Image (cartoon, rainbow, N blue to C red; front, side, top):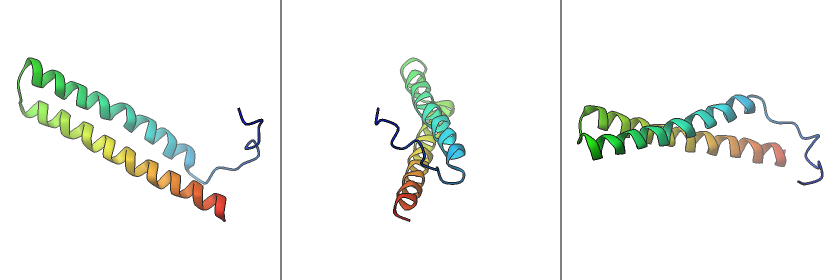
Length: 80
């Protein structure tokens, strides 16, 4: 892709853990929202609907936070 220019680049401490946490949250969020949509269409709104919707939204919120923190650590690593 870029000719291996970043092959020697070191990642910040804990970056791999943060990456997999982000992957997990980005998978849970849409699934929770999809389950909530299914429940709303076929079963109506219930406590499980609201729990699924809230769980999906919270997971996506945490994913956004993790991405922001990971991105800022990469930028700091590049600058310093």
